[in-house]
Length: 325
Ligand code: GRG
Image (cartoon, rainbow, N blue to C red; front, side):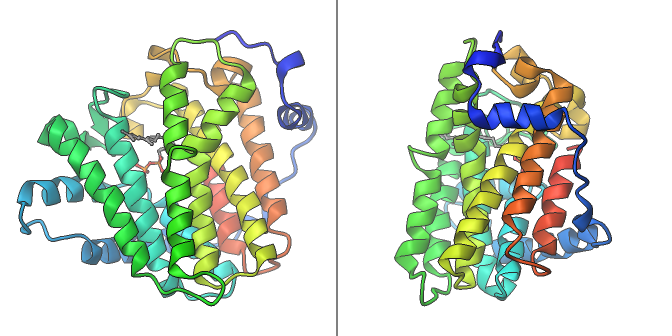
């Protein structure tokens, strides 16, 4: 992973690295907000809704529904649903209207983790602190559990409440684009093909934008759409989601080298073992942390048009920057 930044770094990275050498702006506006309380209540709410949307474990064929439920309720952080609900709140909408979109995104996220863990992909034994889906149900059922969750996401979106600006087709288009072969799947393809190669920084950024930022951004955008947000609000949410998503993956790369498997609930050190290009491998840990902070500050700035209403989004962005799992 020998990548020289100077000549090849895109403008965005040069700016981030330059800014990283100056005194960081404090992410103050998130202080004093009870994020733990928000996350607890919203996780419970999302879990109840997911439980309603999913076929029961006793529904035939039972194996597939047990497998879908196994990974979905294995204890994920529910960050994408939380961002979706918080975006709806920022746009003056009701969280209940954003709940189907929040659940649909979490189904797509869980499908991507199940498939990512398969022997043909990252070949992982642990996820969310438990044996991976294919370890419990076998590879065939794990592939199908992912397929079932991906498909269910569109069924859930079709049941969401449409708004004047955003009819059902628009919501489904949003999900399909984020999950498809130009975004999430493209990121995974580039990630697989990049293993063992000396990637450039723009190539790494291409992967992060697609495999992580696209779905996070989609969660935030769908939250806004559920509140019938204006085009200007949607643009601001998009910039927020994009930057939070990029920061999220930088932090994910950092945690892979700084945390234990026990703490992460998945195998730590996999990126190094698979010779994957990551920010810590390219620029080192300290600059990676500063880049994540700069991206989070950009996300904060994107929210300037929402004075008080976006405090939950701000608190979530700050939390994601400082997360340890
Ligand atoms: C189409 C066969 C096929 C596979 C596609 C698209 C895909 C598989 C995988 C996506 C790649 C991927 C797993 C990206 C990583 C994104 C990321 C940082 C996931 C971890 O998110 P957290 O920390 O996880 O929010 P929890 O478990 O807390 O929900």
